[in-house]
Length: 504
Image (cartoon, rainbow, N blue to C red; front, side):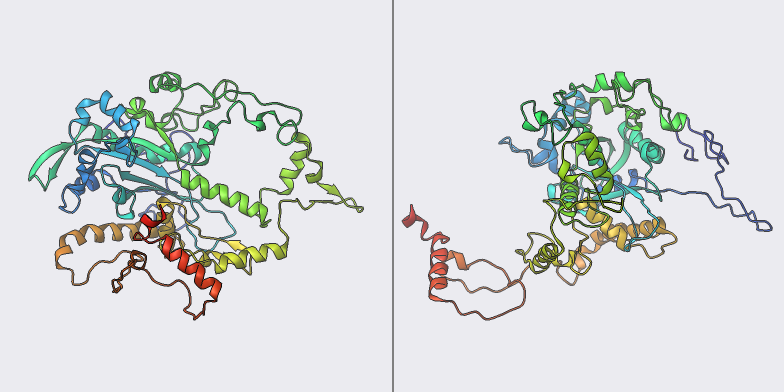
C-alpha cells in the first residue's frame, strides 16, 4: 500500500504498517540507535503533473503550440497525428463539452522497466519510470524529451506486476482532478481559463501480444509438426468489446489498492484472463475511450529483433534456443533434429541448429556491423553498439521512451540511491529547459540540431550537385576506372531534374 492521504477518502498517511499484510512502514532501528529519523522501507518519487501542464500555458514558447491540434487537422484522410485518428474524434463526439475547448489537454502514458546500472550487476535490478506526454503538441514536440514528463519512478529491484496500481494512485488522483478542471493562466490570451485533461491511452509492448491472432487460413494454423504436435489450432480471435461491455465485466473484480494482492479470480484461464480491476477504471471517462491501450511498435520490433539476432548468433544467456526450450520440443513438437541428445557418458548436449551461425561466421557479422556506415541521420552509430571481442550488440535504440531511459541510466551517480540520482538529474534538466524559454532572445550562440550541416556549396548547373552533406568515415583518395566513371556518369544523369524530360 501507499502511505498517503488524498481528496477521495484515502487517509493512510499516519499508518505505520501495511493494512493488508501487516509489514512495517519503516526500517527497524538497531539497538542503541536514535529513533528520531525513521527511514521508510521503500520510497517512490512522484512529480505532480498538474503544475507542469499549467506551465505549458505560462510560457509564450509553448502556449501557442498547445492548440496546434485544433488548427492543423488533416484534410485528406492521412493519419499524421493522433488528432487525425478515430479515437480522438470518437471522444469528441461522446464528450463535446471537453472538445469545445481546444486548450484542454490529451495525454498518453507509457511505462517500462530497465536496469539503471550501466554495467550489469550480479543481482537483477529493475526500476520503472512512468512517462506522460501531451498530444496537443505537434509531432516533433510531443515525443521529444523536454515534453515527456516523468511522473512516477517506481523503485526496484523487482517488477511491480499487478502491484503497479499502488504506485499509480497519486497520478490517477491528479488525472481525476484534471478531468474536473484546474484554474490556469494562459499567457498568450492574458486570461484565466479552466483547463481539463484526459488520458487517451496507455502504451504497451509484450503483454499486448495476447491480442494478436493469425488469420484463419494461415498455413501455420494447420502445421501439425512445427508448433503443436498433432494439433491444428483454429481458435478464433476474442470478440470485440465496447468500453461499456468491458466495464460491466471488470466492475466487480477486486482492486489492488483496496484489497491488496488479489486472489485468483474464478474462471481465470478458462473463460477470461482478468487478474484484477485496473486502477485506470477509476477515471470516469475511461470506458468512453475507443482505444485504451496501444502497441509500442518500435519497442516490439526491437525485442523481436533481439530475440532473433541472439538466437541466430547463438549468444550465451540471450538465445531463446536454450536447454529448457529444447526439453519442451519432445513434448510439444515433432522436431527430432533439435531435441537434446545423449552422450555415451550419459550426459545431455544440445545439437547445433541449422539456423545458428558458427563462431567464425558470427565474427564476420560483428565485423561487418562494426564497419557499417549509414547516411547521416538515418540511424544511430551502429559501430558503437558492437563489441566484437565479446560477441555482443548492445545499447541499440528503439524509440524516444527508451532514449529517455538511456538518459536516465547515464544520470545515475550514486549507485546506492539509484532512483534519487535519476530524479535529481531529471528535475535539473526540466527546470533548465523551462527557464531557457525566458532567455531565448538573449542567447549569444545559435542553437543547432544534431547532425545539422553548415556548408557553403557553390551553385552548379545541375540540381544533383546542390545537396548539402558531408563525407562519412575517414577521407581517402580513389581513382575511378573507366567502368566506374561511366556508371557514375549515368547515375548523375538519371538523378538530375534537368534530364528527366528527355528520359520520359
